[in-house]
Length: 223
Image (cartoon, rainbow, N blue to C red; front, side):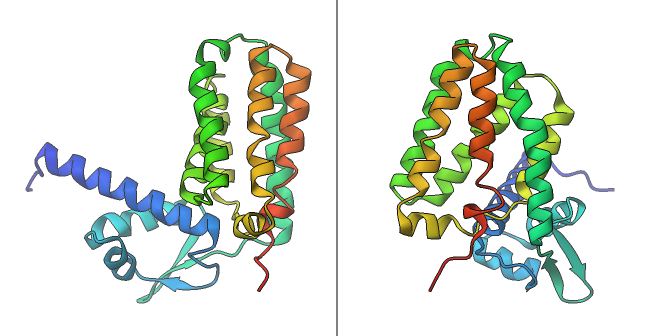
């Protein structure tokens, strides 16, 4: 058996993670469309990398229930139904909103207020500049980073998986309407409530913020 040098393994892992991140973003914003079939070779050519890391990334998405293999053709994006979106919203509300109340009581957010404040600013900047990559990256780090401070890896992993299953195909339409900035600006008040130790307010603000999931974030853009 031939063992790959550590440097090659690290590069392969890096390429796989990069491919996974790009494909996830494509799924979230609707560039990679539900019901359509994509080959690893085709996506690899688009990304400018070899087939292997892309194939591994797509297999990861199969394991997460976001794609399904199609024999001799590639991988199909599994459509998310309206019921799926409502179910995901309900689970995230049950998990994330109460988690903010609990987090506010720990005092762990205050020492990292500048770090999460910078993420909140990046979310707003992404919305203002119509940069969906920046918006989604910062939003992901903000939400999952806050949950991670509770030290419950299962909670963070469940919410991360639910986020990945939630397409945000309506973001472009919100940009067109000038409303994405409103959603982006909701993160700073959540952070302020957490820093102040006001769990009740943090929970209520997160609940209001998550209410976008089954509605605006998932409306297809109008022609």
